[in-house]
Amino acid sequence: MAEKKIPKATARRLPLYYRYLRFLYEAGKERVSSAKLSEAVKVDSATIRRDFSYFGALGKRGYGYDVEALMNFFSKTLNQDRLTNVALIGVGNLGQALLNYNFRRNNNIRISAGFDVKDELIGTIHQGVPIYDINEMVEQLEMQQIDVAILTVPSEIAQEMADKLVKGGVRGIMNFTPIRVTVPQEIRVHNVDLTNELQTLIYFINYYQDFDKKEEKETSDNPLNDLFYNE
Amino acid sequence: MAEKKIPKATARRLPLYYRYLRFLYEAGKERVSSAKLSEAVKVDSATIRRDFSYFGALGKRGYGYDVEALMNFFSKTLNQDRLTNVALIGVGNLGQALLNYNFRRNNNIRISAGFDVKDELIGTIHQGVPIYDINEMVEQLEMQQIDVAILTVPSEIAQEMADKLVKGGVRGIMNFTPIRVTVPQEIRVHNVDLTNELQTLIYFINYYQDFDKKEEKETSDNPLNDLFYNE
DNA sequence: TCTATATTGTGAAAAATATCAGAGGAGGTA
DNA sequence: TACCTCCTCTGATATTTTTCACAATATAGA
Ligand SMILES: NC(=O)c1ccc[n+]([C@@H]2O[C@H](COP(=O)([O-])OP(=O)(O)OC[C@H]3O[C@@H](n4cnc5c(N)ncnc54)[C@H](O)[C@@H]3O)[C@@H](O)[C@H]2O)c1
Ligand SMILES: NC(=O)c1ccc[n+]([C@@H]2O[C@H](COP(=O)([O-])OP(=O)(O)OC[C@H]3O[C@@H](n4cnc5c(N)ncnc54)[C@H](O)[C@@H]3O)[C@@H](O)[C@H]2O)c1
Image (cartoon, each protein chain N blue to C red):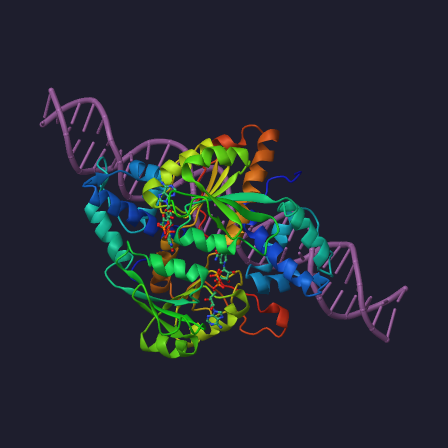
């Protein structure tokens, strides 16, 4: 919290930079330029330099950035040294996929508890993660001091579950349901709206197709990967 | 499509508006104001009005918007009347979750073919969707005239698969791998980077506590308006 | 040491997006 | 009809984000 204001757009790209720096480090690379980084993450090199500059002068003119140092810097910035336990609410289709994956490649994120209503799930252990009765959720969240949750329940009960999460002291929710839940302002919700994402993609390819016919040139200077993340 | 330039930020919100309009319509509502819509989708009402205005004057002063008319308008705009077939590349953890879901609530999107290398999957039918050998992909994509693909393969082969998708004539890719693939400029890629998303969320709750975000409405008396979100 | 080369860091400008605020139209009421 | 309330539409403005472009400077090599 010591940093000054880091623009949100920048914050969203940090994990991306970090991931690639780790890759470079593991590949034995010692230095990297913003131009090289740009190729890999598909973000304009000027944007990368600007992003880095919010954290001070991390590079050397005429040289670039030291991979290990930069990686370590972002590791700290992104709390890579501290494990964040995450709760999974709704161990269905999507929930199980996430559970199996469990962010394996990251040392700092781990789903540590699942919650569901299904009897056949309650009490079992999936991938080393215990599944609890949803009725024990508030209690368990508090006991285990979990402050991030992934919401993968049917949309009908999304708001109800969000309320419970808040009661359980959660501070961040990654919401996969199509419902925009209402929570107190200090709670952050990131919506991952896959249907929306796909529909937008379809809209874009049709929109740009028609656009091409009319204004030939438009696409040529259009950077193609605008990272969509969903705000 | 006769529209002039629709801002990308606006385009990304269209499916959200459409979804809620459908909901209102099914609930028998005839009219809706930007303020009411704003509560549900958690987008500032001025932004909503501005978004709509790019498509012309869709509402009436002092009245609001006619739910059915607006819904139908967006239905056309979003190609809801035409089915878009989507290919699923990599029928693993995540792929199967998506396949089971298959965007059921949407009449215009359907995963119509899956591709994988696993012998036990090839030739089978999941949820009515045939799974083909990955080696037949280019051929099948062309034959079935598929132009959108969901990429859920191991990251190591993400680029290779993207190249094949391009060869198969796909115009849009929803990429779940952490790799930013390189494709010709006319191909659109939407990256859904779940790990990034979660790490960003954690970064936000640690560093942004509550700055930004203004006040929020905790209650909604209208049972229709249990639809909400944040950010 | 000097020079050529590479590449950062950052003011300034541009572009994109969000928000404010008020004129004015629409509908309801008496 | 007169009047009140609601709420869109939009010009103006604010904010955020991206990009340009170049002086500054570190390194490598002669
Ligand atoms: N699966 C996808 O590909 C996909 C895509 C887009 C959006 N979504 C959204 O993600 C959410 C989950 O989707 P899914 O396909 O995994 O659904 P699912 O039905 O497979 O899983 C939901 C899980 O929640 C559990 N559940 C039901 N009621 C509960 C309760 N009261 N408390 C706790 N758990 C409860 C169910 O037992 C089930 O295990 C849905 O809101 C869906 O709209 C999913
Ligand atoms: N599962 C998650 O929750 C999750 C979260 C974040 C990111 N991801 C990313 O999504 C992608 C898929 O994840 P997953 O968990 O579903 O992995 P997975 O291993 O379960 O599934 C991958 C599938 O791709 C198939 N495959 C392998 N090689 C192939 C080839 N050459 N051609 C065609 N198919 C091939 C495999 O047979 C398997 O069915 C990965 O890149 C992963 O990093 C997944």
